[in-house]
Length: 319
Figure 1: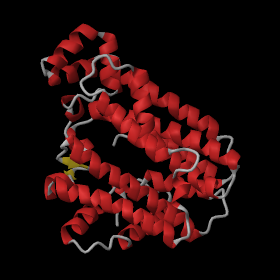
Figure 2: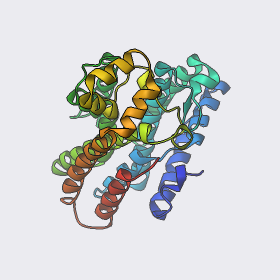
Figure 3: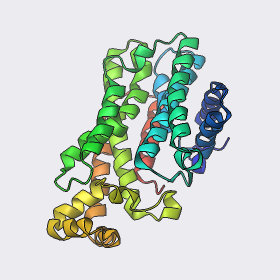
Figure 4: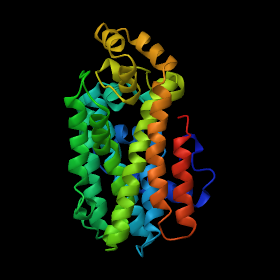
């Protein structure tokens, strides 16, 4: 199984563990319905950066959890993440993800919803097999509830040209930040290291926010072929991310009028020639720097160095 774009080629030990995580995920898809099973395997095989399980594995290196527990937790958070992606694509009527047809486009929304639901069931089974309480995934931090809150917050702001950057940050804190925060903090939480849990949670949140801002940056700085999804899809659906919000700040009257008249190519051109992308990248960098400052306070050693290196690498990615 190839990890997307060979992102982990410089980290062979971590790459090996992530392949084990993928294998563990597949082994826990035992549903008899062939369409649902094929749909789930399709999205597994489409590949992804596996960032959330990677951070979980790295932060679990500061704990005394066993290898099987670490891998089970990593597989659980990635299956949770995958389930949310499947449901997102249904809600957004998205046709492609990671450069291939979404499950809802290929199999229909019904199969896609069942596939997403089943993945949550697989998480329960995996956790119970390793005697890990599912409450550990939400204890003290309410991550799943806040993840949904971020999605609903984004939904509430669809086509809202009065949305502020604070609204945007609040939404992506839930939509993306929470699962990164959970990935970083759940192993220390299980190990009852309260100080590390709190620090890891803040680190994960900052990484997640920066990651989402960079995703939104790349929506406008990349082509559909490079990105693996149609450019301008979000703005057509009334989702106004950081580049659009910065463009509105720069010339609200013009950009608002272009959006209202569905002149999305002209909005794209304005974003590309204005300071919107530069400001978006700077915003992502600010959250990355906050994460790095906290990472510097983690226990010294190889894991801390890897966490910092990967976090810096995410800011400079082009995909």
